Length: 77
Image (cartoon, rainbow, N blue to C red; front, side):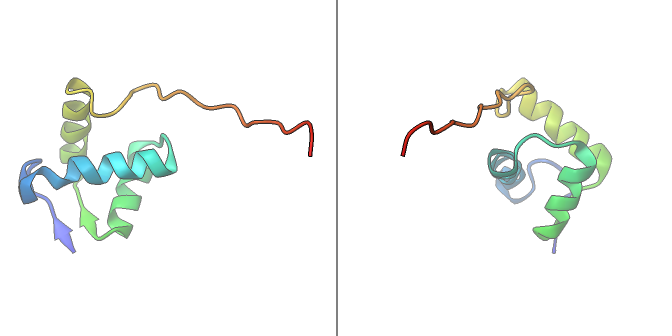
């Protein structure tokens, strides 16, 4: 289990972990993100998670309004 005390712990790897989770699982609320991180063995307290997400938004590492792709409809086989 990795417990983060500040965003720069472990050379800031939390930024990459969150980006990968959001790219694979899509947009989610903070509580769900915290649960997914915990499932990955990374514990981040809510105030720190808020700080991390704010920093990621400011640095444009994550998109606050990700575009949802419409599913492709196959009309021929």
